[in-house]
Amino acid sequence: MGQVLSMVSDGMLEVGSNNAQQLLMVSVAYHNIAVEQLVLRHVSEACVSSQNARRLARLCLSYSNRYLAQFESTHKTALKDLGQIVRTKQNSKQAEMFKRLLSELHE
Image (tube, one colour):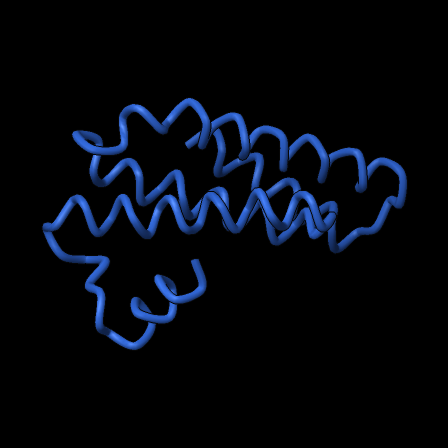
């Protein structure tokens, strides 16, 4: 997963290209990273990663359609976990991030 994202950042893999298969590969990498971040309890990072996966998947629906339900489920789980953290810690920085992520979920 890290290699795929490194290739994107190095310009070896064009995310903005018209190649839907490459977009799907990057989207799946972001999703899998989000799952790992959830397991490690890096919840706010998982929210960002899962949102990236969802956005990229929307750009290649012909290939990503079968994965969308899982991407949505992971993102909702991350947002739910973040909400629980915010409610228990009442950390204002995390509360602001949670509000922003919730608003992006409903765009």
